[in-house]
Image (cartoon, one colour):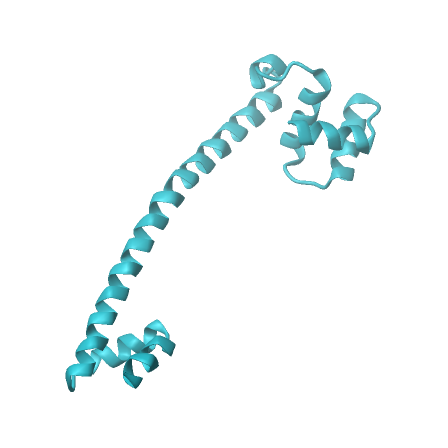
Length: 134
């Protein structure tokens, strides 16, 4: 039974290397069976991971396209707030979203500064609360 305990402590690559040398006795049959089981489990995990990551990647691509589209509407001046963000009624919330589209990434102070440039006034506390709400 010591052989099976050794197998439990080995990593996957060590098990595969041992299995590649071929069975030498009945205990090595256990090793090959174990490697086969581990291979099946790895394949099942990879399949499950693909099922989770593919929709996320698709949603990410769609979001990136929408942001580029909105950016082009804003750049051309043909996009009104109601057209770009139909569900957002509050003008300050809409301005925050426009700022986020314009600067792409930034911390709260940078967002507040950009919003202040757009609206004339803005406080970090209010911007933080609005971003959390959005």
